[in-house]
Every structure is written in C-alpha cells, then in structure tokens.
Amino acid sequence: MREYPIFDELRQRVYPMLKPIQLLVAVRERKLPMIVYRPFLADLIITYVIDEQASIAYLNEDHLERWELAEHDLHTTAIDNLRERTEEKTSYTIAGEGASRLLIYNTLDGFDATRLLLPKLLERHRIDFPGQIVIGIPNRDFLIAFSDADREILTNIAHQIQLDAAQRDHGLTDQLFTLRGGQIREYEWE
Image (cartoon, rainbow, N blue to C red; front, side):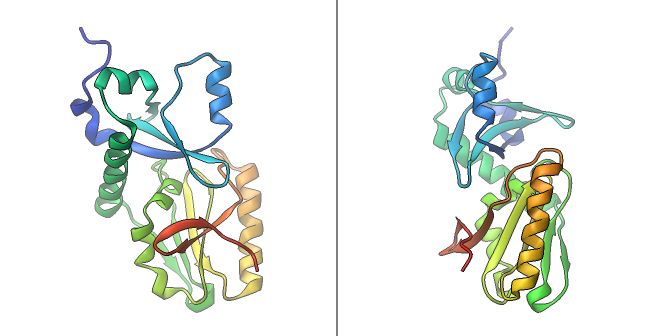
C-alpha cells in the first residue's frame, strides 16, 4: 500500500490558497513537514492544497519529493484548476454603476480570495470601473473589486475590509490590491 497517492490521482483537486505568512511559524512550531509555498504580496503566501470537499490538505515538501514534482509545475496545475473551477462553477455578484460598482466573489468554496491569482479574470471587468480597479480580500471567502474614483466610497470600503480582515474567520489582509499591466500589485493610496 502506498503512503501517498500518486499525483495524477489528485491532479484535478489541487488548488492554490492564499494564507497569511504566519502560517509558516505555526508549521515550524508544530514540527510538521514544511508546506509548499511561494511568497506573494502583503505578507501573504500562496500555499497548495488538495480539496477534500469538506476540508483541505496542505501539500508539503515530502509530497513533491515523492511525486518527483517541481514547485513550478505544481503551481501551474493549481492555477489552471482554479481558473477552470471559477469559469465552470463559480458565480459572482455585480452591484451598482460607475464609481459605486462592486464585483463580489462570495461563493464560500474556500477559494474566493484566492481568485486574486487570476488577473485575466479580473481584467475582464476592468472596463466597468472608472479610475483604478481596487481589490480587497479580507478573508478566505470574500473578494471584492471596486473603483477608486470616489474617495468616500474607497475609504468606506477600505475601512470595512480592515474590520473584516481582523474580525472574520479565516482573515487574510486589509491590504488593497490593483491591476497594473495585467498583474496584481499592492494598491497605493494617492
């Protein structure tokens, strides 16, 4: 009996997941095998998980070694799976017009915030937002995109993101993001 299934058996259930960098401290303190990760923005890391329906299992360095799999191949597979899952099964909400327009992913599938890693998906909506598109991911199950054209709306939503990041389960960050040159960047207040 194999200790680990072979990668091809799991390939379709492998996804990226954004997590606070503090997760690495918890892994070390508990003396667990180091998870596979790559740095992201705003004290976040990209981890890799197997979706087990009601839970997730983090992939660690032992998995990669046994599967003889490079991290960049794992990353590509995970991003492709997230893109496919999002395009086939995931809906979003659009509310408002102009500077008060909101794009919200809140499917509660555990990957809403991680959809930030799909800039082409967000780029499709860019034209609908005056000014810069601003993106918040206060917790694992929420992604909101909005405009910075109205300073009051920007400030109010940023404040709510700050509260939600601190108070909601699976909090991530109060940092805001934007799209620049087809890539996700940290949003800079002017």
